[in-house]
Amino acid sequence: MAQGAGSASTTSLDDGIVATAETCLAAIGQAREAIHGVIFGQEKIVDLALVTILAGGHGLLVGLPGLAKTKLVETLGTVLGLDARRVQFTPDLMPSDILGTEILDEDAERRRSFRFVKGPVFTQLLMADEINRASPRTQSALLQAMQEHFVSVAGERHDLPKPFHVLATQNPIEQEGTYPLPEAQLDRFLLEIDVGYPDRAAERRILIETTGVEDAKPRAAMTTEQLLTAQRLVRRLPVGEAVVDAILDLVRSARPEGGDPSVSKKLLWGPGPRASQALTLAVRARALIEGRVAPSVADVKALAEPVLKHRMAVTFAARADGESVTGLIGQLVAKL
Image (tube, rainbow, N blue to C red; front, side, top):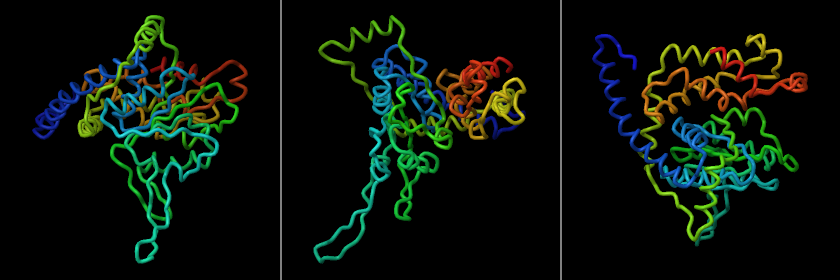
């Protein structure tokens, strides 16, 4: 960890970070253990979900039905001590069904006034199940909440709880009756987390432990205050110049203008500065989860795909030639 030469304030700050980190690491370790007691064989997915929350962001879980996406979100809410709610997105879902609405009340003296009834977005962990099934109008209702952490209804501002996270799920193959998320909405997600099939050993454990008399139940391992402390710590962790340069090199090379010549001509659009911000926060959170107080270039490489995948698109010609966003990100990572 970098330390200022002869600076008492810097030394004090570093000592404070280390002391706070030791406390947070113990709590995070207990949380990981509690989650793995319910979610089997998805260590990488669990860690990416924890990175998302510790970094203070939102996550998009993409995977086929039956891969425990919903169970993961519910488990995270319980383990991290968060007030969690679930909204099943459907084509007829309206913005007011998420944000809330004003109703007209009449008191005993027949005086009328409007009263705001909060919607399910007023929670600490919102699960947006099958988010791409709702109309663009309803999807956009989450935009302000995800970015600003407040909503405006009838011209009035209503602040959301702290912390506030959205974990959305999406089916990657069933496109009938769905509305693709616009680029502006995708950019609000810190990470896109691909949820794949478990390996044989994990699936064997799933068969044995989930078909008995009782299923494993998640248990609380952290409090909201402990989580907020960990989130504040993530923003205080030092980031070395080599890591900053790696983040800038990676993000800037993934753009159609001024990017890597071998890749830029194959792209329709690429990541903006928000991707650099997301990657800087995510590598800090990953370092903390792995017991370190400073991120490395290895963290940048590990998180490049989940941070950039939903912020890039290949041209039709490149797609016809067999190119993919994942493949192009791999080429850029290899050059770091």
